[in-house]
Amino acid sequence: MRLWRGLIGGVLFGALAVEADVFRCPASGVSVCASDRAVVSVVCEGAGQALHFLAAAGLDTRAGIEVHVVDRLPEGVEPEAAGCYVDTERRIYVLAPTLLMPPGSARASGPLRYSSLVAHEVAHAVAASNFTVERPTLVAHEYIAAVTMIAAMPVADRAHLLAVFPNARFDSERQMSGTLFLLAPRWFAVAAYRHYRAPGNGPVFLRRVLAGEALAQGDEH
Image (spheres, rainbow, N blue to C red):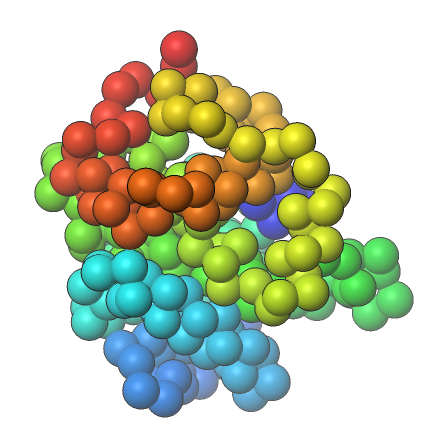
């Protein structure tokens, strides 16, 4: 399973939810449909971290978001995806943790926690309601989701991930493309985060992306 990629937009059908209840995350507009309260806690943790980061960056995070923990993603999502955001439904679908990280598997102790997957998809949802351009590019969406995901990670996890890709960086937005994201999503995520952290970028660059003033060109170049 690839935990670094989701499908944005489009009308998707066929998600099969496990038998579940609906819970509301404290102090946010996020609701979680899941059968396991422990999973709900992790989802709320990841969502809360993403919302905190994005709100601090100046985005409006007040719109409601639904997170559905499912045993199969909607039809049309690539087979390796671990989660997706469906804009027309304003819903996030994520595979149940046991399907992604079975007990005893290498992934169970890997650097990307389940909460990080949730943070990534929540960033897509928040970005969708903050874009002021009609059709944001793939690279614009994925830049915001990648930066949010890494910023929301525990310090040790983030340090480990950055160390795995010591040379991943973008010196300018012209180096970013949707094609690069599709070919090397982890490298792209780390490079995007380092770009965001560079002097003169940060929330200012994020607002330019949302306004269509940056990362607005075609996804292949």
